[in-house]
Length: 398
Image (tube, rainbow, N blue to C red):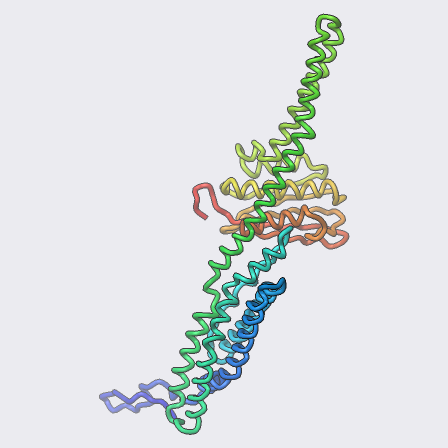
């Protein structure tokens, strides 16, 4: 059977001179659609049995400790069924759909529970469950109609197959496409908010400890020294003058400790002169010669600027303490809507996210603001750390 448009040429020209080439109704696209429709029933049975079993066991065992983990694992398996269906639609129906992003990995102190909750709320998994629920009756219907048409309605089979396949295409696009990426990203950022809170709490504890053990203790000793000097002022002026001189030295040390502490919270040079000057300042305090190159042209918002500064600051501290390097470099530049940072050193290498809480904390802090943190540090060196942050300038536009 073939499809051909009738000739409308008034001049009596040959129809083949004016019409599009003949297209066979039973071409390879039609046979792919027929194969897809016949495979609907076994695939629908597989998916339906899986999701019913998964939901029954998951919800039924929620009274025990394994219920919610089993439900999260079941939804992860549903994701794989969705991946299989997208591949089948791509091969047989020509439907090109991007794969959804994987569930983010949750580290940190409450990582297991955050990962569990993220899996249970996974919109991709739940939409795949819904897809497999409604596919069973549809699979029975399409299989039956296609099978009957193969033996009874052969002349119209291509048109029937095309209509049923178009419904399948709409289902795949509607339920298996990654159109819920915004919802997933919102859920991810909500989960990452816990990391930010933990980081802020740790910073507050560090500041409190530094104040208590450093400047506060020094000021207490200063007050006691001045009190003793006051008592000896009339009895022993020379001793009092010596104690005042010591107190003056203590004041200088206390002021220096307070400056260092304030620099650790938010350095004034960063606020006043921006990232380039601030990074040059922190590089000058590194025990290894550091070359700083910054090509920004504008300043990002204060939050991104601060994260970039403290990321480089901690990486340079690690280079000073652990790398054994002889030289290092810091490169900062803007690429479209991203702020990129690369810190390199020629030290002994071997740095990794599993090597301690410092690197892992940096990665979590950047991930919480939709950033990236990548370490390339083979044993023997060199080490290259690349960090990316979203760029948003101070006018509020990307």
